[in-house]
Image 1 (cartoon, rainbow, N blue to C red):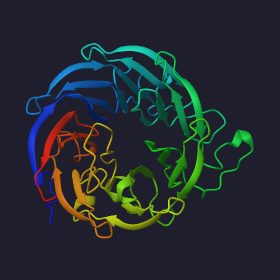
Image 2: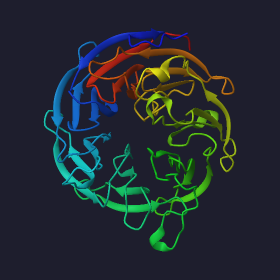
Image 3: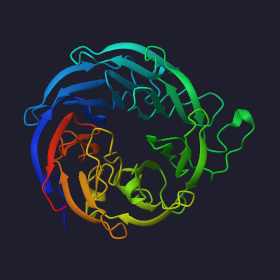
Length: 383
């Protein structure tokens, strides 16, 4: 049983380094060509960290957020970095959208373009091919954030290429929401794009598989929603194509577990028109709901091109449960095989591990939602 106090605990994990890189917590981390890109949740923009020596990471540069708000998601392709702008609370003034940077010199990222969106702005993004970015923006005439493809072939002038929305969202076009009162349906994402498909979580709308073989005309292949009766807030939809599986997370959102339980689901998609949930990943939970903060799944390692592509182990950021690693070699009976719970950061009610990334060498990077410490870890357990 995993102790539920506020000390550091680990199973089958070795700590490589622990580095204070900022005063602000982070929304996302990714590693590309020996540089970690850490997008902060509020107030500190994006920090670039040299991790070529993972035992001694060094901050290279900081890209400040231009206005008060979220710039908490980052994507990198080649020498181009994109950063979201999403309104945070009700701070003014605010300008939302996607900022584009030339990072050919990591010591001096240079803003070269901006795609403006109305309203709250862009929550998550996927950009790996240097040509198209897949984003979740607010758009006039829709109830909430939708799925949009940006043409990035001229990175100084991103333009909309196509869009898709959950049926019922386009009120300006005469559609009427069909979801239960009190539910929120929006493209949360990230949109995971692979082999002519986009896999997207829609918060209380469940998951969708979209056919984007014609990128100008995305179309629905299938959808599945566990809400209600389960807790909703579908976050990440990760395909494991060799195994015809999806790994799907429902984001924990309330402190002290004051919400229906959230799961990491395993879906069978041998017939992609009829995705079927076949199991859930279960993490040791005794005492965690009493620790404070959120407890439960958030993001997972997304098997991003250039990172570790792993369809046997799932690496999960679990808020006050730290990092959890599940073996899904038997998809009907996932087994937790490792964990790392950092010591509670000073001034926080509890640790809030927010994101995880695993590089091609198998090193694991985690960041906290509110604390500016980056951990580099190594899994030492069975495979």
